[in-house]
Image (cartoon, rainbow, N blue to C red; front, side):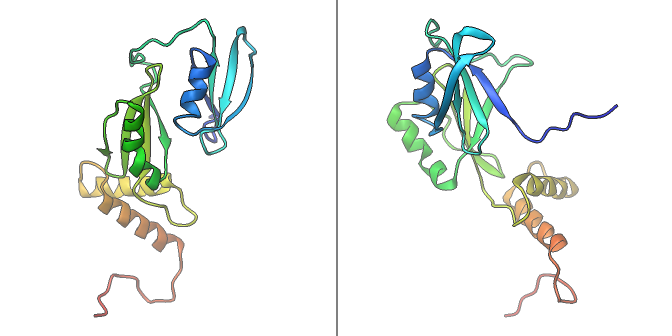
Length: 193
């Protein structure tokens, strides 16, 4: 038996209401360029809108002008999507509360996640959206996932409850030390003062 190895998210498709509400939210609130539109090839009465969330992958929405938004949270039953999280830069994250407030969009306020900060709010159709901003940049040649895996190992070895900034800093140092050579005899921390 062999795996079907994934190489990233190709796209996420959502069921929308009218076309304009999708454009106004995905492009007008979240800044995702509306890159193309065609009929839903499986259901001719629907349109299929494509948005670029910033990494060249896709968020797509099936729209139908006969559908109207329902003002309630989407289901969170087993098997349902709880929320979708989008990465934002630190400077954008620091302005997110004010920008949501100026639109009158109710939100969670800033949530401390140890390794990142988050803000949650619902889209016009009740889907929970998270804006997430990492508190660290991975060293050259590594990904955020590499740092998080290393930080997890450090956290577990120390018996700590969740990943905190100390674990991240130590993880980055460990990754750099393992991947970069030095001419020094040893690399322990020192105080030259």
